[in-house]
Length: 231
Image (spheres, rainbow, N blue to C red):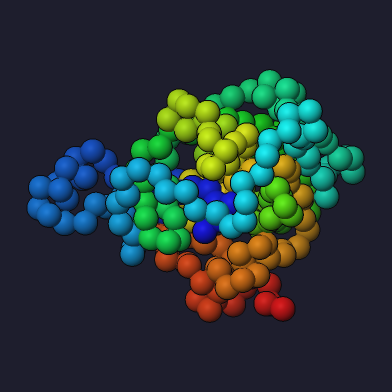
């Protein structure tokens, strides 16, 4: 799965279903499934490299991060790499659930929170969705309530180390309650939208929302109101 991101938790985007240490130990002792794993997922050791297309070459002199579309002010916002790197940083510990059915537990992500971007470049009141744009025109759509959680992060580090180019350096989006494809690698900006529109994988048969706890993998599983019509 190309240009992908992260997830822990359940259908409540602000919360999640993180297991207690005792619950995990109990499951291991009895041989049952780890309660931190969503339906159909298996525990992964190591971090596979999965993406669509080539790895882009990072050019610090021309790289920028943009916020555009239905902003509150009507203006576009942009930061070069030095400016973006100077924004306030935070850390999120979250599990990572790939739609290809592997999960990695207890990842530490470091970067700029979506809340920070929303505060600096707020959306207009009528915004309902965002489109996350990445290199080569790759895109992924999110409901604004999914994007705006305190655990959504534009990550530059994983487990204390800078991301590698293959894993999304310099910035990838982490959305810790959705399947990983909802968090693209090599992110270059976000577009505020007043109506939903499918992104790259959503146009190619993947679920418009992507909640791993509801196993929302494919568009044929969508219920009425969960996504715009497929073209």
